[in-house]
Image (cartoon, rainbow, N blue to C red):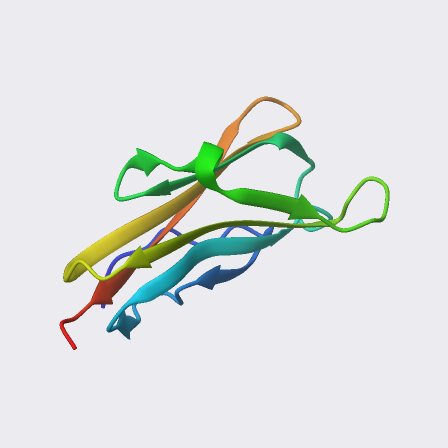
Length: 110
């Protein structure tokens, strides 16, 4: 089993799921609830895949309540490169601390 950091209270779900094995991946992302745990700066949400920042190519959205309580960040990709991969989300808490959560998944040849 791959080593992952403890899940932050804000992280509800990640895609693909932790330690899963896929034949291809079309979406990499996470759902977060910023009403859980400490407050966060929504504008600081970032997504990295294998160490590469894909935030500017990702779609970020929140719920309609004010301030938005749930957020989603995701990156659509046709990803079939075999091997182990790592995704990471980062954001700043209201006190400026950088919070991060990473998870691993594998892609195998069909």
